[in-house]
Image (cartoon, rainbow, N blue to C red; front, side, top):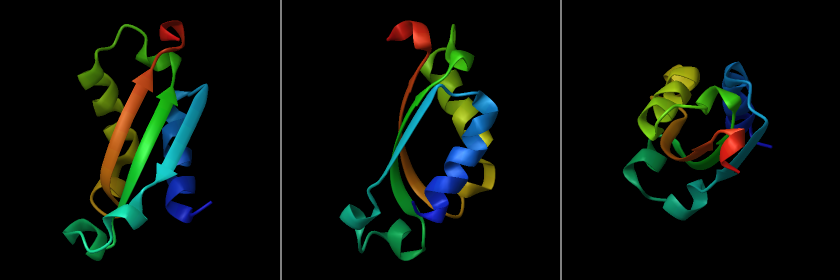
Length: 88
């Protein structure tokens, strides 16, 4: 596991997820401006009871808040799929 994925998982722990899956798509974006600057491209699937009753915007905000400065440094693009357990 690369260090950025490990750091994303560690920071998302604050959301008490039941499941987290992160895929590194950075290789598919080689040469892209964000990739040249060192930021990776990731797909995130997360299931957390924290998301119960929240709309998609609130869920994404919670994730971005948990990731903090990673979104300006090591993560250039993040595709998010976020569920609460009762939605499965």
